[in-house]
Image (cartoon, rainbow, N blue to C red):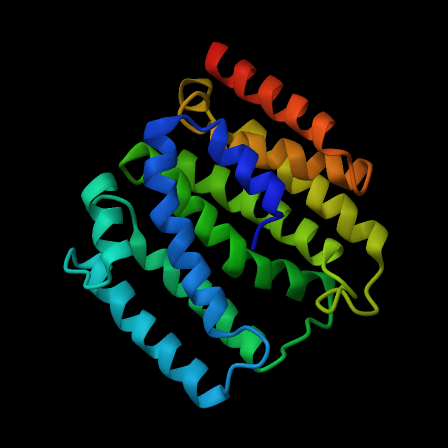
Length: 228
């Protein structure tokens, strides 16, 4: 779901307490992604996704069973809207059946489910509460990250014959909208998302950047967020 270096830097600069909350959330996302990876039998994948649907319901009700979900609730509390993970599961269903968006709008709707809802939840997990501003920030950030990931994927299967330039423009617009939607008072706590957005936007401008410039950009973005 994330470029490995981008996610590693975002977690590194999020701060210890934020990183502790985000790690089980991203691990749950990894479990969902692994359920539909290439080579998994459809019956097995469907069974795993069905189990996680039940677990998301239990998580939203404050009664999770999986160790990762239990740790998430212990760290972030019951206020974040964990039911947002159902959108992530819907996107996993689409991946399982090989769904390919036919238009840019369809692709944006797909990444809103796979990335947007997840990043809104991540923002709420960091804040320990639900908040319309955090929802807007996460939704825009996730759309931008999802479009960037679709453009970067080997062979770009979700992009297919769609024109790349308008998708790049949409991704850039979403990433900037996320930054603008986040109140200054929340920026220090949401460094994870701001760093991810900055790194993704840089890759849209210059694909395959070297690690050192990415590290420098992540540091500058996190430092600026702490000062605001």
